[in-house]
Image 1 (cartoon, one colour):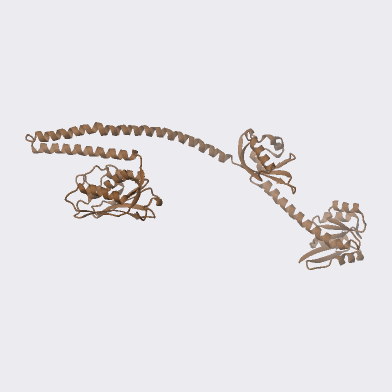
Image 2: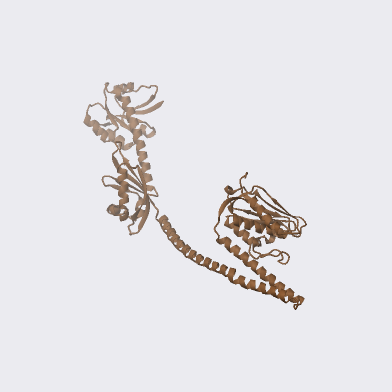
Length: 510
C-alpha cells in the first residue's frame, strides 16, 4: 500500500474540512495529512518532516498572494507544491506555476473531488522528472569524465565535446569551434561522410571505424570511432553521439611490425639466395666426391691388388700386410664416400609420403641382411600389422641402418635377439628397435646421432660412423624425433616417432 504524506497550509476550517473529505484512504493509498494554519508554522514543520506534497493556500494570516509561494520555494526549493486559491483566476495559476508550483486548484466543492487525481498525477510527474534528472546527471558524468573522447553533434550544426576529446587533439573548448571542420584528415573525409549517410538513411544503427584526426600541432592522430544516431519518439534524427579512442600507439606498432616484416622478408630472400647458392656448391662438391675421388681410390685399390698378385713372390710378409692395409683403407674411404652421398641425398630428395605396411618392410630388410650373414644365430621378432605413412625408400634405409647396428652390437652374444614394433607413449605412436647386445653408456647418448661420433672402438666394431646420423636425418624429414635407451652389457633400444601427431598412428587393423 502506498502512503502519501501531505502538508496542508490552510487557515480556513471549512475549506480544510472539504479538502480533507476528498482524501479518503482506499485499498491502494493511505493519506497521512498534517495541517498548519500559517506560513511560518508550515515552514517550521518542513524543517523537521518530509512530505510528498504541500497543498498551499495563498491567502494566509501571515502572508498573502504569490509571495506566499515565493517565500516557501525560496526556503524549500525541493518541495513539490500545489497552490490552493479561492479565486478562479487563470492568470494567477499560470504565474504560480512559473514561480515553481507543480499545479494549482481553485478551492470549491466541485473541484475538490479531482484533488486525489491531481495529487497522484503530480507525484508521478515529480518522480519521473527526478529519474530523468538522475539519468541526465549520470549521462553528463559519463560524458564529461570518460577517459575516451566523447562528442555530440547536433543536426542543426551545434556540437559538444568532453575534456578527453579536447586533450586528444590539443584544442581548448573555445578553439574547437573554429577548428571543427578541419580536424578530420582530408583523406578520411569521405569515410566520415559515408558513415553519416548510412546512419541517416537507416542502413545501420551504429558504425565503428578507424580514421585520422589532425592534431593542433599538425601531427596525425589515429582513432577508432563508434558513432550512433539518436532519434526522437517520431524517428526524426536529433543528434549523433560519438566515442573516440586514440589508437596512435597501436598504429605506430603496426607500422613498425610491417616495416620489420618487410625487412625480414628481404633478409629471408637474401638468405634463401645464399642457401640456394650453398646447396648448388654442395651438389657440385658431391659430384666431385662421387666422380673425382672415386677414380683415385679405385686406382689405388686396383694397383695394390695387381702388386699383391703379380709380385707376391718378391714381397715379404710385412710388404703384403702394408698393401693389404692400403687396400682396406681405400675401400673404407670408398664406403665412407658412399655414406656421405646417401646422407646428402636424404636431405635433398623429394619426400614421397604414402601409407605402407611397416612390418612387411621390416621383414624385407631383415631377410636381405640375414642372407649376407653366416655363422651367427640371430632371431628377429617383428610385430605384425604395424602401419606407417612415409617415404618407402627412406624408411627402408632407416630400418637397414638400425637393424645393421643391432646385428653389429649383438655379435658377442651367443643368441642375438632383435625386436621391431610399436607402442603408445604419451598418447603418441612410437616405433622401436631393441636388441640384447652390448648396449652403451647413457652418459654419452647425445653423441649417438652425430656423424663420426663413436661410443665403441672402430677396430672392434667397424663402420663409417654415419649410420645413426643418417637415421636421425630421415626421421627429421618425416617430422619426427629419435632417442635411445640402454643398459650397458644387456640391451639397447632405439625409439622414434614420425609426424608427432596422433592422427598418423597405425590403424588397429590392417
